[in-house]
Image (cartoon, rainbow, N blue to C red):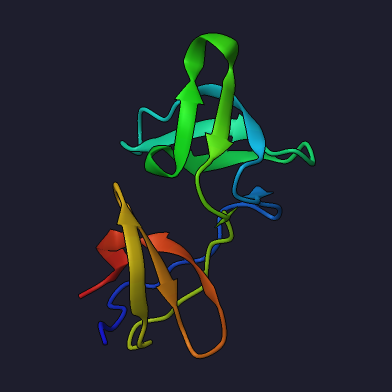
Length: 109
């Protein structure tokens, strides 16, 4: 399993969450994180979503989830072992012994 070499702390106190098939409001593509867009989940929580996990209808301002998505970021420290589940642009969805969430790919060795 890869190990974390750079610490990461979550950036947002609340993160979006959406079930497969549900619609989110599409606002705009994230210019700082290729492969991600900014939007709002069905509960009104704004945040970032991986573009490849959604069917986008940009003119209508809607994106439908192809799979369950939870935008929670993990706090990790150097030396932590993680299992990489998926990568989307500069972010990796990882699992530790305690939780699953997103960290920047740059944190991994």
